[in-house]
Length: 189
Image 1: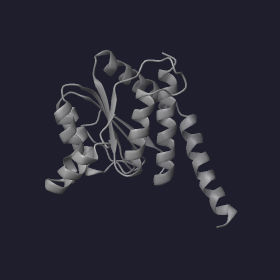
Image 2: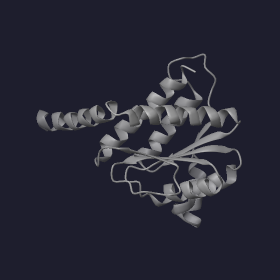
Image 3: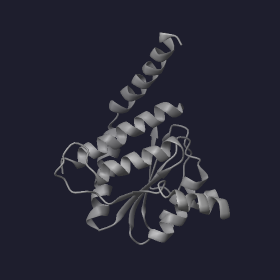
Image 4: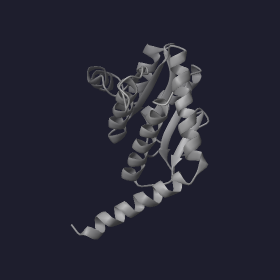
């Protein structure tokens, strides 16, 4: 592999980070999501996070940072669940019924304890993520979708943050920057 191939990726990532860091939208969404997490927990409700593949791993990482700690060891935990972690349920449900409702079924089971529903989908088109957001919206749960720039409009999602890239790996890296920024904000509360 040539050095230049890695350099091109880093340049594209640097460009995307430059776009979001110079945009007020990025900082506003960090503040809004931080406030939504605080509000959900103040109401004694859970934040649910979910996605597929790399986004499933991001959901788990984000939830772990909320429950554990980010930098400060003395802060309270935030109530959070990654809906990607119950492999017995997800494999049984998707095998016996359907994969498209693995997240919405869990939200249905946890309701009314859910206060914030965060879907991660680089395309903004993952059927099981969208179904979970639709159900959440119908139950008056706040909905957020973190996606790439080609994410279509979804009237059942209250907040969509489109990362200005079409490249999956860059969208995922910026998603990580987002949830680390949120955790950093929460640690200052």
